[in-house]
Amino acid sequence: NDISHNEAFKALLAAKKNAEESNVLVNIAVVDAGANLKAFVRMDESYLGSIDVAIKKAKTARYFNIDTGKLGELTQPGGIIYNIELTNQGLVSFPGGIPIKNKDGKIIGAIGVSGGTIEQDRAIAIAGAKSIID
Amino acid sequence: NDISHNEAFKALLAAKKNAEESNVLVNIAVVDAGANLKAFVRMDESYLGSIDVAIKKAKTARYFNIDTGKLGELTQPGGIIYNIELTNQGLVSFPGGIPIKNKDGKIIGAIGVSGGTIEQDRAIAIAGAKSIID
Amino acid sequence: NDISHNEAFKALLAAKKNAEESNVLVNIAVVDAGANLKAFVRMDESYLGSIDVAIKKAKTARYFNIDTGKLGELTQPGGIIYNIELTNQGLVSFPGGIPIKNKDGKIIGAIGVSGGTIEQDRAIAIAGAKSIID
Amino acid sequence: NDISHNEAFKALLAAKKNAEESNVLVNIAVVDAGANLKAFVRMDESYLGSIDVAIKKAKTARYFNIDTGKLGELTQPGGIIYNIELTNQGLVSFPGGIPIKNKDGKIIGAIGVSGGTIEQDRAIAIAGAKSIID
Image (cartoon, rainbow over all chains, first blue to last red; front, side, top):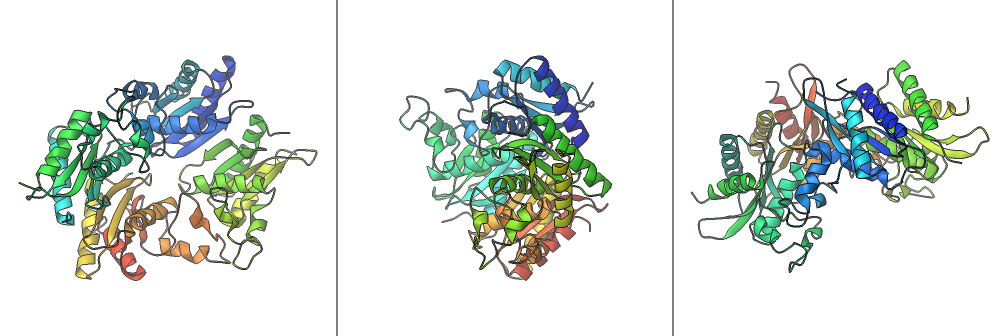
């Protein structure tokens, strides 16, 4: 149960369309079930620093099958997994990474978005992930 | 005084059995007295991101001969060893790493567990470490 | 003078079409004029190890504005830039990376392809780069 | 189609048995279809440096679905993919890494062995991989 490149493109383009409609410039990364990069695009004029952030958001979302924003609630000072971001060659624990499920609810990959506000990034990532089950 | 691979397997399997009985999916790593990887297993469907976390928990536990959860009390903002997690290519300072002692109380290695809650991870790691002196 | 994401997609899809017609499974990466990742796709069942090779081929082609295969002639033992592959966090000096030019002959990015034979990878990369000036 | 932890253990133990019968001290690593670590053991008195070599052999074998020794024939000075070892954070291109197939011939992971001669490492890895289809 692994995302296909056609599905990865579908998620990428759905996310990009959502970003364009919201006038947000983002980087979008899709990883497969093994957390390996499957598809990527950086929109013109979006942040260069968001390349790595988008990829790490997607990887983090698949590494722990979690909305990356949820992870961040646990990694703050005093949190139960404080500083886990230092593992796995760098995790991202703020919103913008979302697992991608197939119609059976099985996780087949993940999408990471970076470049807008964290709320925008998260909404765009969700639009991408949702396109797979529509 | 170094853990043997038979002992490492024993600890690994005792931890795995404990995890299965508790219905938790985890990664389990055992390191030797030199903090080098000795044995490892990733249970099916457990988090991909827990591979590195489990190994780093085991290494951290042996690097400082400490229950990794105890370390976390000292690494918070304002703590006496704030951000020590940045050393040694990444430490983990929350529960789930436990030193392994032999029957004479000598530390011969350590075990790290990741995939459940921090309480579950710690209990599973303790079950693994304890199997060596039973 | 920088490749746009639409052009990057165009190159990516032209390369992918060429690969599919040749029955080759590849990873395709496009970088911009700043050698930063712009677009990427990994075809289903293509090599996992080719993710990094494709990206490094594209970067290498832009770092030195060169067909990566040409670089390899100079990096062999006794060559004038022996082992330059060790710089820039890893270069690739065999065929499959090609600069992308616009209609004025200005280099605006590069494309890297990995997964087939080096001749196939190079032909696919050229097809991708060529699509921008057709 | 991914190797299970029971299959990974089976391959690990079959390889270890083969090593013990040949009086060779080795490190043995098994990765899954996504090239992520699944199981590992370091035999007592085997080389510390072989931990990373064994893991990288297994990853390399899965990255390119190849007997790592075959890769080495192509990466020598003058070879068609000279210095590819510098990609993917370090590949190993000498014998000892073997893809693991299931009974249908589908690659579900890989095994890497390090510590003996390259012929011994390769034979032990093959014994491990073979155990899955016996």
